[in-house]
Image 1 (cartoon, rainbow, N blue to C red):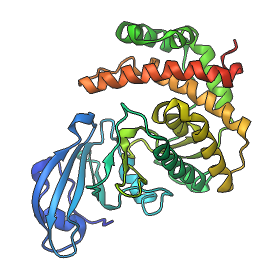
Image 2 (image 1 turned 180 degrees about the vertical axis):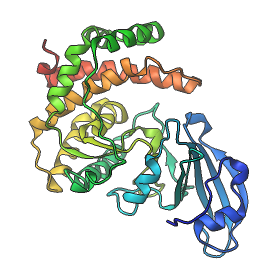
Image 3 (image 1 turned 90 degrees about the vertical axis):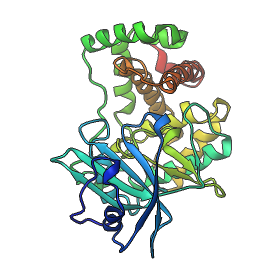
Length: 342
């Protein structure tokens, strides 16, 4: 990854052969064609596949542009600078990453996986793909478990354990009910009537959760699967953070894998953590995962109250996740009944 005086592009027209030559640290790279990709995913960034010609140049690269004033922030550049060389799981190689704080713009130039299969957060994974993802995420979490390196990264925020006031929940609940009240099931409807109790449960269950590096936005739109090996490649590190590992893992258990595969997925994650030297017991992980499920409930109810979906796909994501959430709560009662006690 180069770090030079190369400018940060503001728009598509700034991505030229000359700019790519500088960004890649190569001479005479020729930009053959450019195609915008990922528009259907409603990204906070603009992403281009650039097909290249030149000695020593990859056949194509991904160029990702965004405004640092928006959801993209500045963390993805910092992630590749600090952790990208060896994060503990497969990520795209980063050829160039830079922020222009005066312009409020960021850019990364990344390895392109042309033959990989893009994940889709509207669908669940088959068991083997779920287990492959668990292998990757558990190794990643174990590598950074209670690591002092995280404390020295001043730019890396901690995911805060919820500490909202009643009026915040009251205002959010009203807006959420107006927008999505017809989509929620009985389990969600019953629990969100007492948000302060939910918050207390999250704080209680996650207080002792093992701190590690988190992806922070782990859903299938951010995962590629390599065509032959089916090994996952994790994309979009704009929300990388530190916090309890279960906040990543809960996305695999309650959204990504099929409900009937949860036991195998849970056991695989636990076994993998332990094999990497993490000291955690089964009942402890179950307890923390219950807290993460309630955290997820708050995020997908009160947390989305102000979200104004712009695309049909975004509305479908909300509908899908609320349905998964209701089913998850119903099934988890059988495993962790104390979580739902008043």
